[in-house]
Amino acid sequence: MAFSVPDLPYDFAALEPHIDARTMEIHHDKHHAAYVAKLNAAVAGTPLADVDINDLVADAGAVSNPAIRNNGGGHANHSLFWTVMSGAGGGEPSGDLAAAIDAAFGSFAGFQEKFSAAAANRFGSGWAWLSVDGGGLIVESTPNQDTPLMDGRTPILGIDVWEHAYYLNYQNRRPDYIAAFYNVIDWNSVAARFAAAR
Image (cartoon, rainbow, N blue to C red; front, side, top):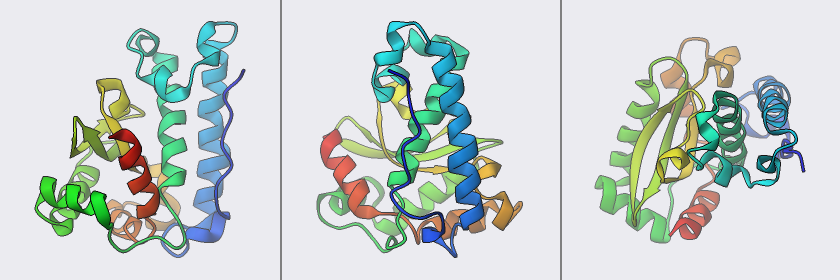
């Protein structure tokens, strides 16, 4: 069973003006599709072709293969990324997730400060994450297409800071893209991931 690119749960233009339709189209249909094609080539004819993507990238033996690490990570990361955004997103979380954010970072503003810094200060290409570590939350950053799953943590929110995620609209203004991202976060989706991870 080959891996496949999941459909976007919304139209390419749904996140405008914060993330433009052309960027979404290229990002989903070209970049994510390339990771999946290369991952399928790397696992073809092996038992790894039938493993859940999140289990695959959490397997230290599997990700010792650079093709699986890079392309499997790219597939896992983007599959999460599309689902934690929405045209009706923004605002702040509520309930258990909000309480956990307050416990970990002091306030939602404290979380935003740490998350924005992790995204802005990631040198080169990579991601910033809100992850479940044990019972609590941490903000972290990973290079390239690495994922917290590789280190035993569960990402519940991620922002892609590879230039392909924002360059058409924001050029070299990564902080502007990060600020805009808060307007499209689907906190209901993040909260569901938080509940599942606990």
